[in-house]
Length: 464
Ligand code: SF4
Image 1 (cartoon, rainbow, N blue to C red):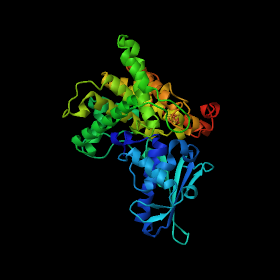
Image 2: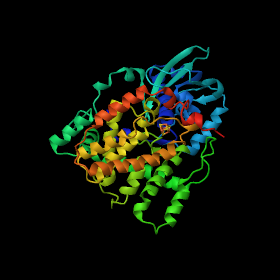
Image 3: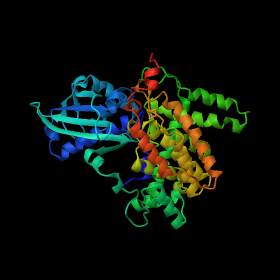
Image 4: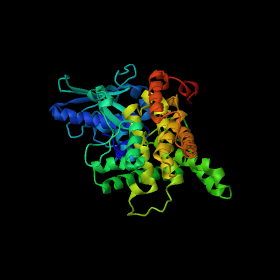
């Protein structure tokens, strides 16, 4: 059952599907081995990265994430400096202390296997963890899938028909829905807006104060990523020699304060979005919104339009602009997650920056006073003009085209919100139709354009 606090997950860069997900998978596999009573007998561990996790795994840091998961790291709490130092040490080590288990033999070159030739049937991001005993016999083998936005799933979970799942929890006051049409029907029936429905489902799950604390933490991490990105200069890691640009652009904007604010709208959205995605590319702390690769769109919109709305410590976050933005955007993101996918490896970039644009347009429309119907229209416009967007990251890194793409996505989201607000809410294309179109387009898209770096910019831009 999806929650706002699942859609917005705190983690580290550069990728939710290729970094956050693999870290969660290896730790979960060890827990599974412990539950089966075999972890204590392990003498060697190996991880096999399959499909897209292998093809772009080095650039996305999937090997690092998988290894850190084996030692018990959690994406939302880990210190990026500790992570880097631990990974470098384990790359030359001969053993590894498994989380909640024994110290076992481990050789990075031998025991981290990149199997780009294996494209799993259930999802293109497969990761298998194997344990062997002292005699070299296999004790345990489990494959999990990183399904986008930091979500992970077992084969059993992926095999279950999606239509059996509904968004929201059973319980007092819950308002579950499984499509945009159902969400709008609830809003019309009960006189609610989309953020009210999403909040009712959060209330059915946990005390309001915990939801408020979670929303505040999400915004603090988003805002912190903007601030660090605006302060940081230099070259991004990975070997592409991509320069950080947000800091210099920010200084330029500050010094050009005589310009008309209307002329600077694009500049501000650009600089905030790029600051977050440069931080993500550098392995810093960001929030999946709904993925790491698309982490800049929503923070940029909130910082520009909502952050200075008079909220004070102690005020209910869920009732202010930031809370309403996040709840609305999460409600839209849940429908994409449930009915299609948030994974670039399944949908191309339409499933990452495209979805972020759709969620951001909905959130902005909500804080601008849009009705539920106008918000649904904003979300629809935000995706309609991202359909077919491919994922072709140069060098397998989350830098080109990802960083600029978030800036473009933020501007497009603001425009989608304006278009819907100037309309009555009536429109030809529904959000459900555009989500289904995205899903079908993603299925038809060649795997070259789905986070494999085997086509598009990845093969036409020479790395140097
Ligand atoms: S191109 Fe889009 S989907 Fe692909 S890695 Fe970059 S942000 Fe993610």
